[in-house]
Length: 267
Length: 298
Image 1 (cartoon, chains in turn orange, yellow):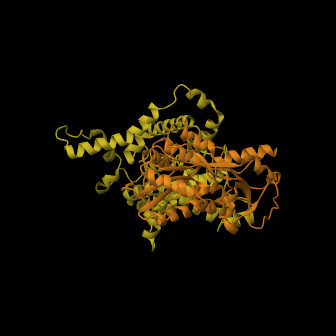
Image 2 (cartoon, chains in turn yellow, cyan):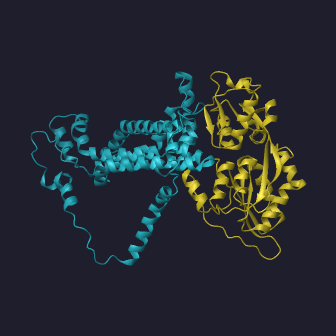
Image 3 (cartoon, each protein chain N blue to C red):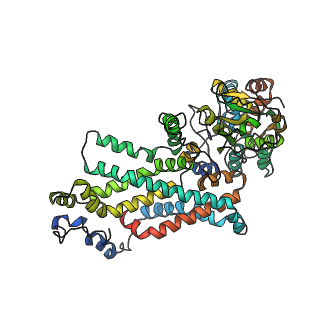
């Protein structure tokens, strides 16, 4: 549902064998083939951006701006758990840009020599507790999440929000048994939005994006587990010029404004 | 159909009526053993090439799994208790889902095959909907229906204190939702092929319709039920989308093998391959064990 949310009203595009296998495993449907075209100096063609699920809202906005600034281009996104995306890139998925939610997941790609330039951190994100609207259980700290009967969802430790949550819980010296380990941050949040869970440890930006469907609770230990978000152009990029330009937009003051507006912290 | 099952014929019916012979016992068995091999000469190339391509397409990925398997570290990978926990949960849940499907699915198939009511075609189409529905959508639908805040779920919670998401029961329900249509379709097909005159004969001899169903129809379509149950079980075993969406992912409680494979693939591909091998072995074992019965009726 959330794992590979392509942008709405765009044709599903470009997924190589690797991603096809991953998506088939997860029960999603893969897509056709893309035709990148770089004509002369002006940018054109499709840029395929693999980005962490938490970047969905802000990157979608930035993608629209990019298309407006560079007519003839099209930005296609695949949002998902950073590790899934990294595994897809490792298996040859045709992406131009990778934006991960942790330096570790970017490292998986960079260590294999799949990045064209060295990854750089463009934003940071910290955790928050998402509770039901109005915080009916009066949750004020990580410790409160251990209350008996409270249904808490954490991210699986395989994805960045999960490892960050573990770090924060360790820093708070809290032992927590969740009802579920979600496969990415958006599905953790969804469980609270649907009121199936009482709380989830997610990113500040996700709480922001959910609007009034959840309420955010900050906690001090989040400072121990701030995630760096690195971005890099990929070696296999089929549209390197447009990829460069997109990364430049993300790092520009304009891009920074969109990202901080969504709740991200400046690096 | 096995000879064993086809002897429900109570005293008065020594042999199937001549016209109804096609649903009798011997005629089904005979062509199978006596079927001549396809004449070797002249398999047209336009058929042979795509056929071989299709075969390779199905087999190569499985072969790749075997080739790339971390055979050396395999014993170590498989020794982890989490693997067995996930496998056990998968087997238990798939079996429970199949049992549940049998209890409600067989009567549903009978209703569709043997009775006539307005809108039966529509009902039949709706029953098969989960076959084509993406399982994740099924999971979302289950959440909205049976979740703590769902249309039915809120009453379950308020009246009985039952919440299904994030529980093993939730896994069973998610798997049943996805797997039951396979059983219903299979059983309904068998029922339609079976001669209704046996049932009619039983009722004219004084049996109630339910007794006729239990003593005559059920044994008659047992092979179809078995085939459907195997299909449903296999589908339930591999269920991913509806399970992770509705029941979540917690080791030992809702983390079945496919979920374990998916999450392992993100952090530890070698473990994912090892887990996949286990699932492959289980699937092959089931197919081999039921080959005879299944191939014949499917």
